Image (cartoon, rainbow over all chains, first blue to last red; front, side, top):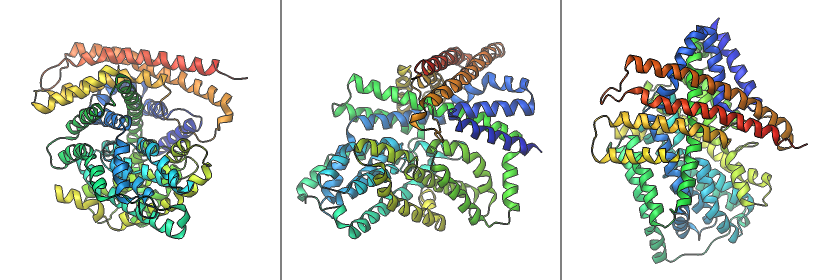
Length: 438
Length: 137
């Protein structure tokens, strides 16, 4: 039975990963090994002649480096302080308001940056000192920022969504449309979480200074170039003016222009942004190449249909299987990075999900499953022991015990679980906008 | 190699203003070349994702050794890719593969790709040696 090969291959992969083998090369190695075993080394060697070129020479994938560059430029040009300043002017005088402003700032920053870690890092730089100044508890301050950072990958543009779309051969534009409302819902649930938190523990989130309306308007006015860039890029995609590649190019150019206008674009910053982009791009594409070989191997084994059969025979209802998959993501998220999870699991889980009946047409199912997966995967960024966001925030907070930060994120994890259940129960939250725009 | 990324974004911008015949192909080919060129840099920066399951910071000796081992295997893979793509470029030249719309010969992208894979193999060995040397005892 050829599914045995697949299971053996996956076991090898996990062993390699446990031995600190980097993800991309590990997937490549297992994929190549399996491919050679099943169809002979000659076939593999022929495939290798051009596979790498065809994988990388893709018009659709060229959005990845350009959105990464946009995020890098946004991170390095101090846009986060403008966004936080405006949000804080409106919210700071409420109880827990500075924390709420951090969440809003993260959401707004996520709208021009597709990475959670970058969002968390950029907002921490400006928001942490303010949160400290108003004597917010360490747990609430760091927890809020770690959770807020996850908005980076959810609110479009999102690099992870592009990769999901590639993995399931879906439509990136529809995915970007679908993620917006769940992203805004996240901002709302985080606000509610903070409000409840400071009601229970008023000393954790004291009130900030009230800011006069004229100053609020002034702070808001300063954000218009950023809002404009978001509207241009994402609005352009939604309304069909640009395809995602064009939008990403405009976005990168726009972010460069913004950075230049703020005087933040010197030679050094540009160099750092480009090198950062180069590194992350290569990291992602090595994994993409590995995924190409691994998936070719799994497809040769008939693994996707085997998994779907397994699910059909299991006598579990579709929702039970879905919940199992989501629970699995939560466990996996404890020690794996979000990109790695998407790459490893989507080729296995998507065929299962596609074979289940949730009463949705296939195209909608793909979108719905993608957004839910994204939310659960991003949740892995804030759960112990390896919550990447938590680690980053904790590092930049300096002196706060890691335990406090994890305790601070717990209420947000709870809020996230509730949000996932909402999204599962009401697919309309995800599917409304794509339906409206198509 | 960084200049390459700028080129992509500039091309993207130019493409926006006026539709150029074959713009998709140019972007795709340039993207491929840039990405190939980024691979060795990423390895030198140790930028590849590693799933850290069992090991802690204290186990530096073990992790260094494993990292060096993984880098050696990766070097081998990169080398095989370089070798196969050298044959691939010969095929492409012989068959005269050209892009669909404006007929760019497809083999143009191969030499930088092959060079990148060779460099990647070299970078892997460099990091492997670095890992082994930096063994604190």
